[in-house]
Length: 174
Image (cartoon, rainbow, N blue to C red; front, side, top):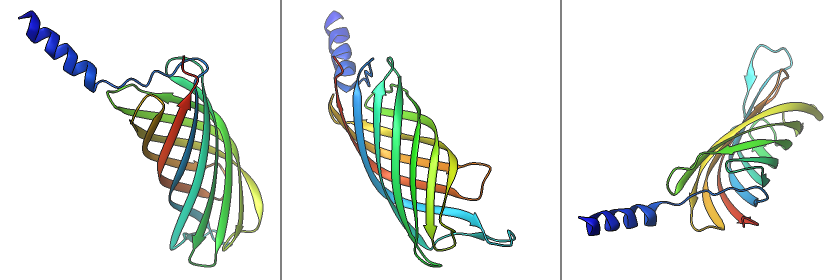
């Protein structure tokens, strides 16, 4: 009986992959993926969207405890259809990771600004609120990859959405 329990615990321990975020842990992520926007036209009677878009993003996180971290996120996107348009985004906020086996879901919130130009946009800067989330697949204690989504907007004109594949490298967790 005790051998079965030991084998069972060993199997659970081998599958279990904690996201032991600790105070002082650092993480850098790079992401690439799909991006789109929605903005009203000049008469504000129609919503304009691109035909296609792509984004590159980077995130730095510093652990505040076991599950929370402060984060700085930056992204740039290029859109086609209706004229070439670009956006650049920088936000500062918090992320929260939920430890579930080898898959680690997370949510994040941030505030910052977005620069937009080209296409239907007048060149300018807008304040934004970012809501983000995703899931990381742990490939080891110091690295993971996963899927990340981000929605930005505010009580202004432009709303952006991105869905990316991301790779993360961690250090300083001891």
